[in-house]
Length: 449
Image (cartoon, rainbow, N blue to C red):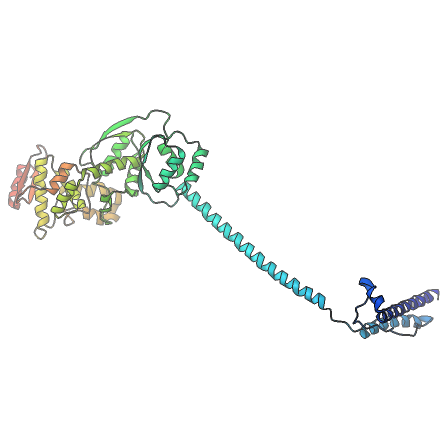
């Protein structure tokens, strides 16, 4: 019973508290001065006073009274809430709208920041890739570039020379790498470099050696093939044969005559015939690119404007002249016979209906001994094109590298009516004929029948 009484007293106190609150709100509404001084805890001016939930106190005793007191407390709270109309809270809604705008502005700023960051990353990545490609010479063509390095050139000046020659893109990067690698003294002189050379190769190519370099004189005989010249360079410790061949086949050299070479897939070696035979002085362990360029540069000097005028007067191209000259070089041992052999081939070329085939033995030998061993059966078209017993007219390109005497003989043949010739292999005596019948007799005289 005591416990029930305590609960009833607590319920009564709760109701009394509600009534006191309601009376205080009514008094505040009736007294504006008190409302102004009420501070942040006072009610809003337009807020209606709440009425008491019930004037009846909870039951005084018993179980039924306990439940009544709880019910009355609940209903009193609900009725007070229902009778107290809510004044629209405009300020919080304005705050929520402001927060929405701030949030939207925040989203835009975030997107702009992300896009800007990505753009910076992309630009930085592209630059890093370009810088790495420049250092390593990635995806650059094989193109020979000749540079002249004067006395007293330092790293900064060298970087600028390389930049102007198209060998590098970023001079400042080259200087940094050279400083990091500890590049030594730069050797002045003329160099042939390749656009596919990386920074390290470009530095090594012009760096002065700590020991004096040995030189060697190499004589290239007239009529040597490209592969024979490559082997000759290796035998004299100039450069390896493979490096020589790679430089010849894969480098774009900046000479006018190179651009005149026909774009023909039947040509076996593109620069065969253009490596001028002569005596050269090379460094041992020389850069193969320098070696090849020396031969091409010599050829370019030898083919003067006068010789080009003579070629044009003959109605031929330089490539055709070299092709014919290479055959003459392989056939005749001296200038007199070169002019006569040239006349035989010119007469046949001028009468293709009667003499469609040149039938030159050196072309068949080149096709069988030089081309067939490399291309095999898959290159039968090339083999047949070079073999003038199979293909009509001149072969696609020279079969060796002729000297100046053979070149001049190809341009200026002797005036004859010869269509045949043969020679004694033992005495090297030549026999010429105008008809097949005479030629058959000459074969006997030359001990070939």
